[in-house]
Length: 439
Image (cartoon, rainbow, N blue to C red):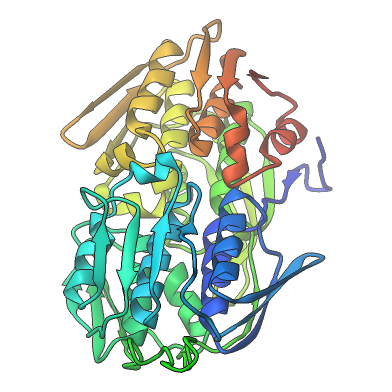
């Protein structure tokens, strides 16, 4: 466990998964060679690299960076296999539909079970030729079609769906205008600007002016994408705030001051900070001025967390951290309410059911009804039970935080953390000095 002169325990999160995937995909569709510094290498990002190679992009993996020469893409001769990455599959739907390529997008059995209606339906409204096996789920088959811009109000706030629709809109004829019910993560819009595609935002509405390249972007003679509005650039990936979140929660339970260095600090991503501030914790940040805000975040734990209520409008900024926060507040012995969390049912697992089971087995209270998750504690420190991670990296991480209070927790299937953070358990042990039994 390391400390600096300010008595902070030090932690540097791995590179951001969401931003790495977006950078890899847009680099493949951009004209020229893009240099991606500090990319994340994990199951999801490896799947993204495999997909762009199948599309014809030239990929060079160097020490601490990836170089991708894009622009000359072609329809793949086999399905684009996204493993278990929902972000990768949804973003590919938008880019393939817009670019005039033909492809089948598929994934693991877990990913095939997740709904894709929220991205398939609006792409259809834009004129995309998309067919699915059944019930708006993978595999998805996309054929060339001339797209047109639309004005679309999203029924749920989703950064992945928003990015997919804007990606298709970049190639479409006219303006594509997307309005969200609440602000979701803005990584996609920021990335477009880096790749020389202007994005306009007004409140909850974001829009792009299409190039009109769809269908005719692919040359009949060569079969290659012959022109793209995206231009190659240089990108440095910040640390992943969602990967840092379990360490912040753990530091609160252990009352450790924590300095998180080189982390992403995009306000659309750091809802956990706002919630924990309301509960009595203190944060201080030093943010760089860049397309993707990042920097150092100092965390000072509260002596006792106060009860807190999370609104539906806050959920998009902390959707990955809700199970973690539920565990934290229940373990700390206080009450928390989370509104508008029904989307957790259709993640890698039913995260609502999974977190309720963890909290109840730990001897605390957790209930869900009418879109509201209610938790209260404290945990029984002597509780002993097994948590089946069920191939869900976020639930494995939340259970690891719970084990700081219930030392009898065992985690079954811990290898699922490779999806986003292969070194998670080593880093958690280094920072906290505690690790549950992994079975």
